[in-house]
Length: 200
Image (cartoon, rainbow, N blue to C red; front, side):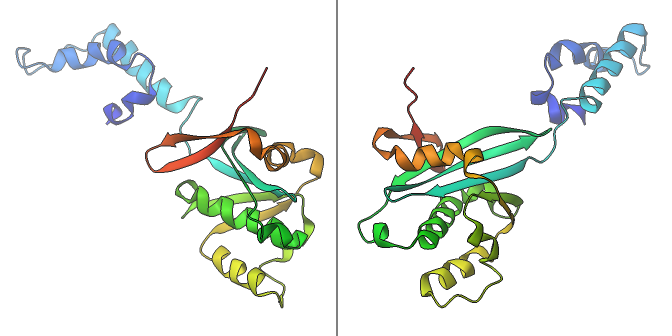
């Protein structure tokens, strides 16, 4: 069974050769289990039981909107640290630039979730926003038809909305204001994101 996880264990072949070598066809039916095989078994067992241990990631989606564009960053949270997975941003259409603030922020969230839904669909994740009214999007009764329609879109996803300060949302905020330096780049076969060029 350990072979199923071989790609996650460094030097798996070098460690396991001592175990697979004693089960070859030319070997007798009795296994010659010596100290070398015992050490190899313990090493493989240690690799699967000690950090880094595979586990489901906790995804955090940060979104933001401004008058020019919308942006999002997908992060993976582990041990209190957030590591970026994907970046997405686009300019607002002319009609979208006339939206109210809550409509722009909600549009950013809906667009980001749909853009990277392969990571998020069927899993619980955390949505971080610096726009407080989005905390009540699924609970309040809005008269605005766009907000009601987008609230229905959210129902197929499992997420917790967490309010953060604007100073903690710098990545998504940067993407909304610098849509002119974005390029298209394919990150995998099924998704394409717009990735920021960082000039040093």
